[in-house]
Length: 494
Ligand SMILES: *[C@@H]1O[C@H](CO)[C@@H](O)[C@H](O)[C@H]1NC(C)=O
Ligand SMILES: *[C@@H]1O[C@H](CO)[C@@H](O)[C@H](O)[C@H]1NC(C)=O
Ligand SMILES: *[C@@H]1O[C@H](CO)[C@@H](O)[C@H](O)[C@H]1NC(C)=O
Image (cartoon, rainbow, N blue to C red):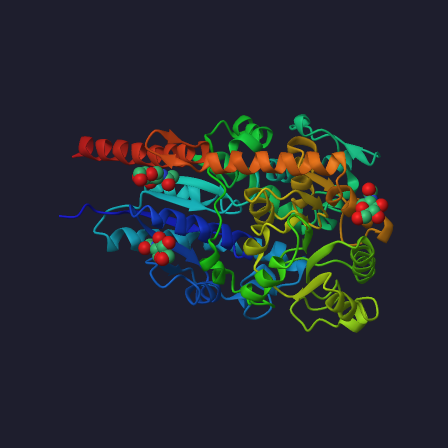
């Protein structure tokens, strides 16, 4: 008889930035052929996910009932991408009502399997409360951070301590994380800068974040060799195992999972890149959820053109406009910009989405101007591409800081969506990295070293296991040990 497959339950918060790394983890675990994966979320998110799962996937989708109206949210809003930012805290708050629903879900799952419990429950950083339910059933519980260790260590410490409220200075140190060195007020996202402990964001985050304390361990989508300080913070803070298992990324064929429609075909994109010299193209993208101000967009366009460097730029409507609406080049870009760079062959302006991994892995691409979202960071570093950082939100500021100050593969060009950015400063940074300057050469070399580090971290061979493979094995072993102890305990009861 075939051995019973263990079940692993995954439950991310309802935001693309959380669902995507969880989906990547689900597919990664499924590939080992040892586990049955159950992916929990609200109805609309699951519907979207279902249409984009790979054909051969056997991931079970289990629904947590949710009606946004019950939580004073607009109708049919189940994902941060469909609520205005000031309501995101409300969406997090609403998830506290999942407790009895999740308990029922776990209970039904166990009944369905004739009393056989899942091996473990992996939940979002906002769902630390799941521990209570896991514990009640004697199931192993881990938190999965889809982002980086350093970035989320800073994010965690900032929200829990609000250190910027205790100083008049623009620069301060994190009280429980001095290793991160100085943070500047410009590195705080808008909602964090004004947070004082009584606003809706700090109220909910100070409630849910400390609940990590009770988890059996924390999985981080990072590579140990690159992110030691951040991982150390969580080990020290919680006294729990922390397992760096990254990079866990969606493969190219599973990109559809993000519901993306490319603004250009992969073939055309590759064809264009094929015509360019080795290491001569700048790739510019601010990710799926972010955009910049109109004035910043203008300056960036002028800088790109003036630099004379080849580029691919993924454009989205600027701040103040629906990010999914039609792009109005004649309003948001310099007059005639698109036609000029098309005629000269200097650049490719892509609307909405570009096949990012194919671009970053192409030999013609040399540098990535990025918002430093963790997924983009991992994809760039996996291909040895150095970064010009322009962090815009959340923990991106600390990702950029890690890349520049600790790893040495990044130069920051700007911060935030409202700062004044000048064409000449952007052009200078582009030249610094793309010309044969000492700094540019250093960064490119370093990025190539990092690429090798990442490659080694995920090596899984009979006589060599990389750090990320070892961490994944340790995590799964820890869950199995708990299962065996539970079995022992229930025998004693009989
Ligand atoms: C599904 O197919 C893809 C591509 O052929 C393969 O890489 C993956 O391992 C398969 N997954 C499963 C669960 O069989
Ligand atoms: C970079 O190279 C271009 C020519 O390709 C040159 O015009 C520019 O001055 C150089 N910039 C720096 C910072 O070296
Ligand atoms: C590593 O490879 C072994 C043998 O193929 C497999 O059983 C295990 O699941 C793999 N581990 C990871 C983390 O992929």
